[in-house]
Image (cartoon, rainbow, N blue to C red; front, side, top):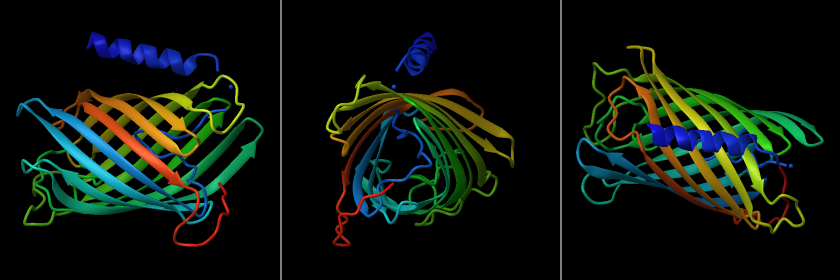
Length: 281
């Protein structure tokens, strides 16, 4: 526990250190801003989670195709792959959409809000009380996110409702287990480098800290995780995220709450579905 407290203190120190225009790209949540309009992107997320009770590593791979339809609307098509069956197996697909409905922009800062939804289908076994429609459960989620940019500091609050259904392949949702969840994420990120912008080709280095919680109203169970992370933005087009998620408190049944996230993303500013080079935000 002392090790995790040290990581938390270092992350908070970096977030509050002196700096100058932040990027609102978080690792464990989406900001209220969208990707550039008329652009597409490729994302590959790797979850490497420690299932200590079983003495093994849970590996989940989520490839995504992202599409910025316009400056206010974007969608993600997701695939879910894991090693739950011993070897890598395709378990399902998901569709995520986010609509930005409020933008208040000013010099050096802005405030934005967006609504989002996800629907997913999964054929894996239901092995934990935690509800997660982004890779584990068939179901849906709907919610809102608000993001405030203050120079080099970005703050974001996310809240959403989640409902789990029966998984495919005969993996029915346990009758005695809660199928609804209220989720929240509080995120803070700060741009550390470069100290001064001279070109969009400069590599950006961001540090972040996120608090991730889930509450099951049907039985009152609750979990809270802390997730420090680092992020590199290369040539304003490629992105590398590295984060670690650690459980702070839980009275839920969770098989592998702690572990590493490694994500790569590449943004294509020319939408291959339409011959245009118009870019907006």
